[in-house]
Length: 499
Image 1 (tube, rainbow, N blue to C red):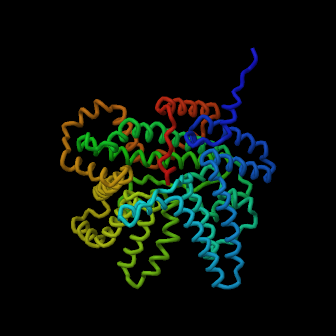
Image 2: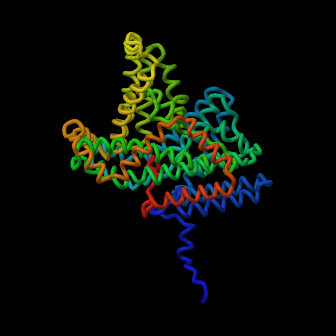
Image 3: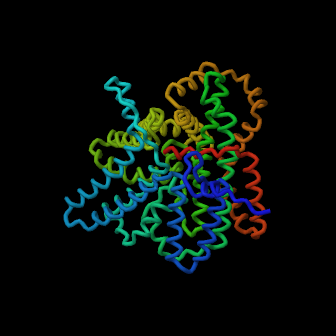
């Protein structure tokens, strides 16, 4: 019997489908990545071919994820490469500033057009200033990430922290690199570009660590984040008034864990994939729910974005407002976190999310001396009890912002808060555990693992590194099996794809 080949289906594997983008964890991505690894191995002694093949695969990956917005990515690469050189070669400070301003306006202008045009049109309509139909604009996946990555390059050249790279090929790989082009980490050019020219042999330890990271990422995303979302959180956040306050509160705890596992799961996979290709990317998370303050949280959460904003927005603003002393710092915090809210998306919930974080930080800054005086008086400063209280209190401040992050509108946020504070009904908790036993176990498991000492993770990682290859393969097969048991029939996109 002749082998029947469905050429139409075969062709679809190489074309863009907006309903089926290429995602980490999909079977298509697994075959794609195995093929990339084989090609990289074949070209291991031929650096030029290795780089060009990685460029090609990165472009194909972005095309499968975002379609013809691939040309926007190509434009971003070419534009920032050219303007980086123009800024560096400017003969006068005035000309240098002109080129830098153009680079900022074009990068932020493109980001603003795709991300915020319809949001501002809606504001105009809501204020009765006109009746304007929304434009047919589709947000390119990863635009916030690759725009900030490209901006870091031109900013560092402008600040004379970096000299422009001569190779457009290498700069393009920095922008296109498929493990982090869609959702970060937002690596700096100064950290990534030298790795292209260096010979970075992939060691046995790298392979073991990569396997550990990819396994953790798969479990976080598909066995924890997606399961909680599909089987409980989506129901509560979609119809909060149908549930009691205790169920809404558990959904908030679930949403906080889901958001962390979804995003850090992607980061873990990106870091692991990068290691297998010979590149070390920036880690994005450091157990954020163990933070003892909101400021500490931002030193643990989405580190590539928070350090980007700290270096390129907050510090310049703080210097500009230094004559205002603490109020100047407060204003810099307010502007920075307003930008954080806008960066996350064109929705009042995200703006409120950013402003609430700024309020936490500003209030914390002004009350810090008073709080310290009281803890010193009670002789609990630095004690385990004090730290425990700080962690629990900070977590609940952050959990409230998770309501804003997960709600489709501010009204839904108010509805959830109303249920939690006026319709709590703790007697429903046993019924919840009985009805959602697996969800409850996964939420508890997720938080227990998160709060384990870091040494436990390090020991587990070292154990995987030292395993024989056969045992590593068995471990990965078990992880795949676990993921398959939990995974939904349809791939759920990563939350941060919308940013």
